Length: 256
Image (cartoon, rainbow, N blue to C red; front, side, top):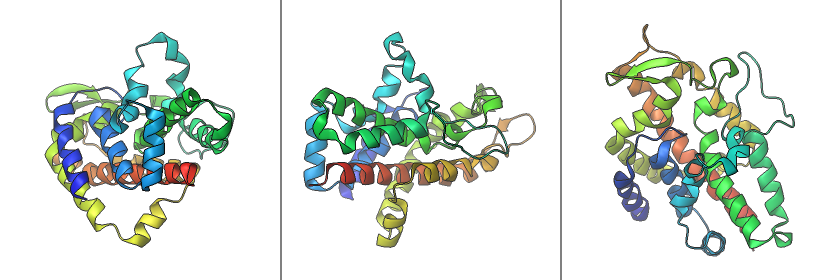
């Protein structure tokens, strides 16, 4: 756990006003938490396929390449928006849920894959499992997961999606790091077992269940301290759970 503490405080130097899920800091936290819960042999196998790339870099890779048109086909993979008052129905749509499930299935037959294919699959899992735990990446289609909901945060105009992605985390960064470390320390074996169940659609449902809280703003869309007090525990819990679940998938995939 000391290792987690050092890693999370190291993310201070990565502070950025990114536009994507959890931002660079959040995705790095998810990746490093996952690394702390990997079995030794699994950790070595994953690092072998990542090559010189760190776990944190694997977590942010999909956002790092979004400006490269070569990867435009991945744009819809970051989220799984569903119409209001509707439940998720599996389709052939290329979204976060289907991409995670497809990638996990592909890695079950990793002995038939090239190292390059495994490297790509790992980068997808590192990032998308994080994305799926940001509630607004399981949002409403009519407002593009909160991207078209205008709000004011710290006297700046932004949108609801960005507020949950990066702004609350960055504004409360020291508290987030401290709380996440404490949360990891206090997890009981029963809680770890519960959270590490691999069920991607259930993960989606859990994230989406937080949407009422996300939209519970003051009139005028001004994000105030009271709103952040309610949002912060959700964000912190989702970061920790995403890390645990990423570790669970990797441990299952690369177990001897």
